[in-house]
Amino acid sequence: MFGRYAYHVILPVIIFWTVSCATNYPSHENFRQPGAPAVQPATAPGGKTDALWNLISLCINQSESKYCLCSTMIKTCCNDPDTPDEDVVWSLDKDFLVIRDIRQCGCPKGFVTAITMPRMKVTGIEDPKRPEGIWLFAWDTASRVIPDHGEIGLTINPQGRRSQNQMHVHIQRIKPETRKWFDDPAMRRQASEKYKLIFIDLDDLGGVFKAVGEKVGISRMKDTGVLIVKSTNTGFQAMITFDKSPEAFVEKFCDKN
Image 1 (cartoon, rainbow, N blue to C red):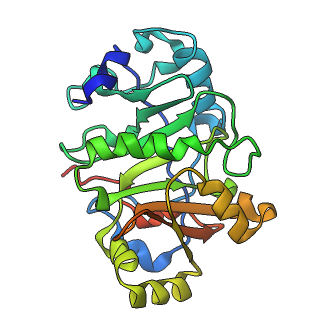
Image 2 (image 1 turned 30 degrees about the vertical axis):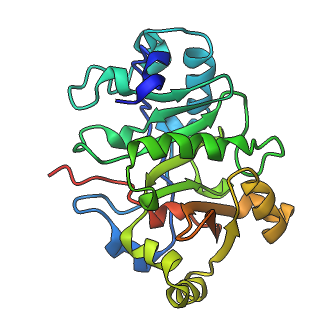
């Protein structure tokens, strides 16, 4: 399914915690997928914030195959007929990996939600070690599984709106209502005023964190969320949120009914 990347993996791995993040966009409640729960602040099982890092350090970085045998993976969706084991890790190289999110489990074909992470310890958007390469790696993977690149949405949450202290960029589809903001300048201005958003243009994905930091100030990075989409013309666009999760504007949940 994933071309040459499949050969990196005999990789029965899937995340067993939900890395969903809180949003404070009440008017976007009507954007929720049918049957999806209301968005609540996320917490990992037992309140642990190191589950993602444990997965990387204990299972991905230390093993070559059969990751479901790793004790950290006990509560996973491995062997679930709806989530083939061979498709669990979508991309992997020496610096980054993309792994299917638990929210993918049981969803119909075509629904996409995955997590991109650095293989070294990086806490999040506020970490000075934040690697710019994570965005291109996430985009390259997303572009293989979401044919219409205009539908791709990459998001990273601010420090106060995430459950895990290992940097992770979400791969999902952007909501159609949100896509209109990027295509229509008038709608973009209205959304910016209503939700206190900032939009910036990017030539490429090589300096997303740098561009965001220059716009908001390095001291505010910890409170900043980012949504990246393909521009209508050339390049990309970033939408910046403050102390709110940009996942309010992407398709986080599928309809399992």
